[in-house]
Image (cartoon, rainbow, N blue to C red):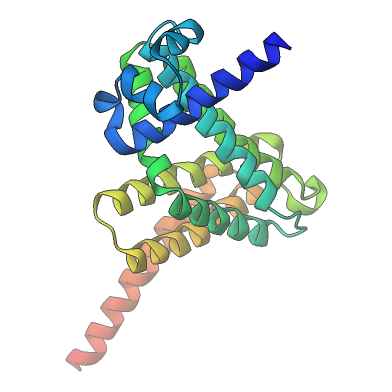
Length: 229
């Protein structure tokens, strides 16, 4: 009974800390503000957490776990890799836009974890995010998808890296139209990358990219010659 009550109080403090961080940021969210937001006495907070760093790291774990669970719930099992990739990135973007304050807090806490020498936690948060992506890709039978576990992990990291870049740009300079187009481009490039892995590895992806650039350059040159004539 006491253990259950302690767990509830700890969860209450973590939730309060998350709200305090959204409002005040990592620097401004003092333990007093966190305790007030959580509705507990300061002494109670320090009973459950040794210091502010312990609270912040617990918040990071909580946010990441919650986001990963949300992604899993919203992703449907599909039998086509291209559709699977499109669904994952569209769902991930929708979740990011609905949880903007939490996304800012998460970036702050990730950098805080690295600064505090807790790189393992920053690494674990990315692994937690990769989980739903890999699981979704693996739900397509390998004989149908042509992607091994290693391939699925590579494609998932590609998607996560692209999504991070788009999200940071949107947070720094909001433009929903630009970001929507960027997500569509990321979907297309990820689908090409997955196909390249099925064809024979990442080098094929690089080669296909160079060929497309060269093709566009040739088309442009041909158009110019035609215009000159």
